[in-house]
Length: 380
Image (cartoon, rainbow, N blue to C red; front, side, top):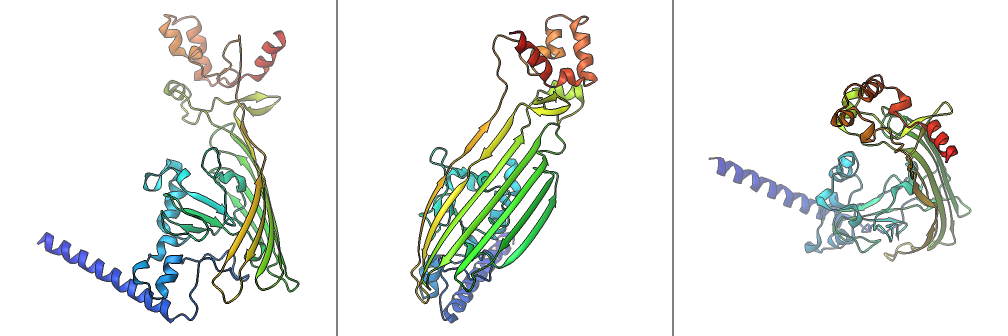
């Protein structure tokens, strides 16, 4: 009986899928002009994302063997959106593939690093109004802007004419990566004189992790694009953007430290210096990008040719403590913990003092002592 019910459910699912495919084909056949994923987006639609691939366009013309579900090409794919962002905190990998197997393109230009094979999203961090609706291609499905990869591909259209006429402002309050975010975006759309201009500014600040001490976060980003329409077929666009990010990082610690302080958010990377919290592990990123894009897209013609030349420069570095021929300056070094004194048989002398420092959270001992470091350095 269970097998019969299961078989019926499978049969119904298959019939429903076939019916949906046939319905989709009929709707596509009824359209006068097939829509191709490479068509120019209307100026009135903000970052319009077209869900059709080349395979689907051929299917609309009668190719029965080229049907590919539109959901796989949609930028609003629920599964992909959740696994790529919401699950990112757990280092979830869609299909178990590393993100170096995903191609990220801007105006068709590959942004994957030649060194790491990965795209650095920090290059456009904070520009959410601009980098909002990419064209996503899942897995090895055909794409119009790249050869594709195992993990799929995404393309962001940064042409000034791609953004509708608008003046938009956003303020966000959060306790995740930062505390505050301000964004201001303006665009003219394609004007009568054949010009289109778009720009965006963003600022993010506060604590990197609001409940972890010493994790400061400061970021400023900007975007500008101008496009000239020469005729109904030729467009020339120049785009430039940059995102400066400086954030304090959190450290790992042993369970003994968490138990002594009764705090699982302890961060050993910071200490007081001149009345302010100073983090020894600061990550700074600023890699501006400049792009020049020529687009050939004649009306009433499926031909679409886009050529992009781009350059990127800047820096991406991380600071850390360094020392030589002096005691280890890290406050959670194993020799500075009560357990080390016990292992040496000392339960009366230094053990009592060290235990009190940790139990009372004496920040001159449990955090980096910057003043002592400068004092030791001056003696050397």
